[in-house]
Length: 108
Image (tube, rainbow, N blue to C red; front, side, top):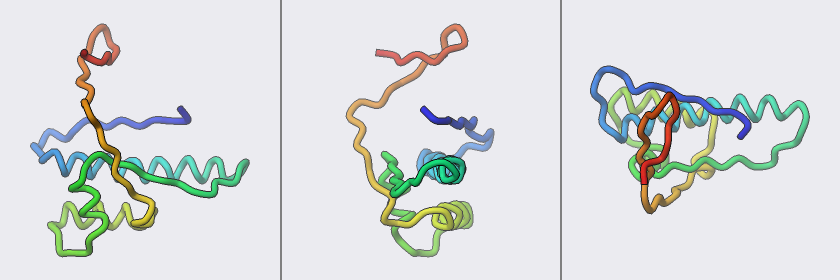
């Protein structure tokens, strides 16, 4: 792992697709930072972005009039990435985490 970033969901209730869109935005910002940092020392030929949210992919790939929240985040994502860089990853059994002793451990 090169780096990681976390963010706590806002106090205002958001739909799961909106939270996943925020995660995609964080991913693009983080990857941009990593690529720029490695660009000084190594040539990175290709970067791919994956999400398990079909809704997020739809928002990224389609140009329609979304609500302001979605429009702003999609615009920021597309300023740093290309639509062709985004793909879907299928998750068979999502991990559910529980906090135990300060560490996140997967629940079986």
